[in-house]
Length: 313
Image 1 (cartoon, helix red, strand yellow):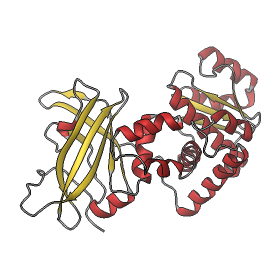
Image 2: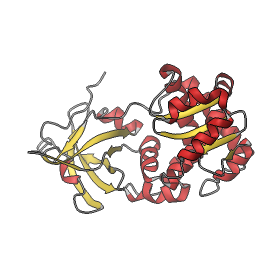
Image 3: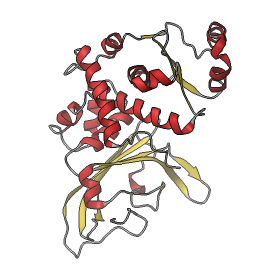
Image 4: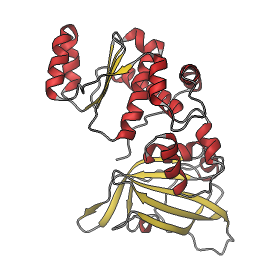
């Protein structure tokens, strides 16, 4: 199943979040430094990462004993899968150190966002990032705001897009830039599509599985089209990529990467376009990058039914 939206904000909300992130990058003198200097950013925010993981069962109970007044509410979230906690009173953030280093980096900035955004700090003294929420309507907004704060800080505003524009349109580009900025390939690929001036779309799939009678397939986790891709082709609404799907032959079965493969799709006006797609298996997800090359003639064979896009509004 496609994951719920984790980042959209209205323009005013986005401007407010990005302004706070920009101020923090200014204080940390982080602009143009690679990889993005996370420790300097945390220092400028005057927050520190707890020296021992609060996610170890023993540490969780010790921490809750010290915070007896908040123990009931905190424990309710602690029993689900917690990834990060921001203690706004003590300026301490707790990060699950069992997840990948790149995910820890994003979580540090996410929790710092909770600390830096005034509304968050005023309404709650504790923030729990977990799969269960105590106040869904507020927590969902706060999570999206903190995600946007982390994204802006990690990719230094529009710097990622500026750098990516000088690279080739290929899946290796966001992979290279992930290392440059200190991000995960997952986050870098999403940012690549979100910010690129050319038409392109990134599919993030769950790991490939084998279904009885259907063979290999992968559920769609997220789809990130560039602004120009969405304007030209619409937003794909696929939920699963099977071997019969037009992108099925891109699934990297038994290998890490599939070579660029030519296919064609129709735009909103029914005009066929030659496209190139390639994929990479991160072990956590399969990422597919697809982008149009040029318009085709009317005689070109179009992909079979199943490659769905939302109709034009």
